[in-house]
Image (cartoon, rainbow, N blue to C red; front, side, top):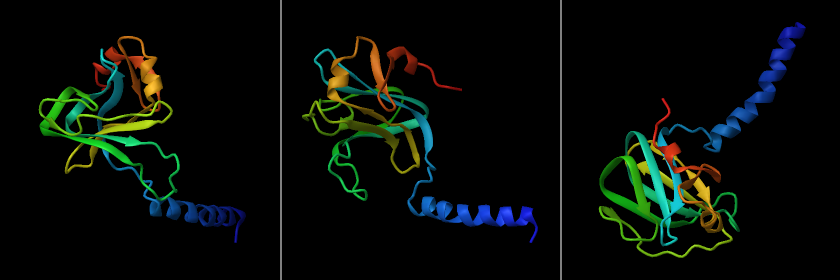
Length: 166
């Protein structure tokens, strides 16, 4: 066996278990990203999901807890799920734990300041979702007017959501 073939065989043998393991764990992401999810607070200090839908529509927004105390194979606990009476496009705002016209979901919730939460927005029956956002209530309380939290806790101007990346 030539040195080149020996090197290729070694690489193939080394990578095969890793590729198999990734596939078995379900780490392949195939969902269409249709927008951006952010969180801010309203004038009453309540958390508000802000979803900028760039392609299609969303009809489900979900708030989940963090992974504190969970085993590796346990899902994040679902704290609340809101479903719209019809799909929503453009910029969607939803008070988490408040009454929202055209949405069905919890109208009251209590969040612990020392925990992290995740908000997701998706289109039912489709493999399409906006990027998720993680935040803590303490982080939201520190936001200046006009700011939102995106992705893994990044703070940006609310106006950054106005345009879709093209």
